Image 1 (cartoon, rainbow, N blue to C red):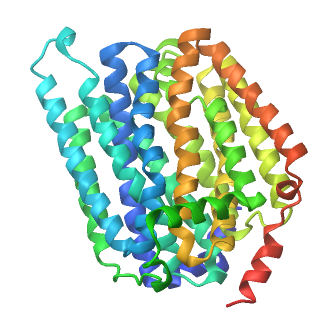
Image 2: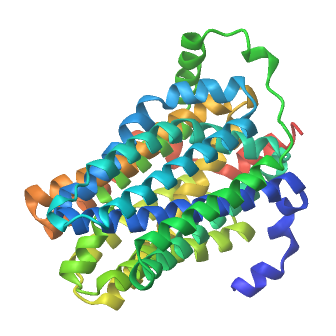
Length: 426
């Protein structure tokens, strides 16, 4: 199946655009770097604290500024060259990676009892500030580089590239951590970010819509929020993702599953991190040729429910290989919602509002991922690790049922109809 997809030219049509190729290569390198960095940072923090809540605090430290500043980041993205914003963000992230390397080198000379996770939380807080400007600019910039007819294909490839980066980053990060140590792993992150920045700079400056330049910040932000919440397809997909991942995810607790439940160590942890993203890559490649455009709402709800069931089964598993399979399956389910959500936003949002709409999306995604990581750590400490994951999966299943009942607009959504209307405007 995968070979047939790769031989099909239609699946690769978006790559005919040079600046998209530069964008996607930069995204791959940058995502790869951040994933490797997150793997080593999470292991290092748990190694210092031996506390599941400390892993949740990593996500919380990043999410607080990312969510708080996201709307302002969207306002900035709609009033400035988005390519320039992305380049500045990557440079700032490079500086953060140098700081993490410095902290690691400093801790090498300290006894274990003198080490603290606080410096890592501070750096993650700064990274959260940076992300508040990165996420609202990323999808709008990609949209500027291609015609409307390529939106669905670009969303599938953007998701594919990101998931490949996470698969490679998770496994390679875990292996480098186990065989080469923290210092080498952080150094590789720095090299990758420099390479990503070079590709981003090669993209020409992008124009700014003149109509938004005279808007005040408060009015601009209000219009973005109003646009999202009056569109049931957009807000419904975002809410479903928020609730499902906020309560249903178990990724933040993987160091504990690897260390204490499955007892597979650093190398096994790397494979567990990679498993859901391996499933996502297979699904994403499939969707480059067969995007989920027909009956998209029903497919979205089915896959979110499937994701929740996978999390429950994973919590109960004591077998390493079964856990790998279940995590891979969960990644395939999850990626469908990613592609559907981003395609909805691309097709339904006018260019002059893309930054602000993406900033609202960032708030939902950051809430579900990073704050979800904190919720996972807190719930694990309160209820116990396995009961907390089972409980979260149950909440996610209830969310699917509630969304199906109270948001018929999302349930009946078919992206192929929206795409036909959009293509007629080209």
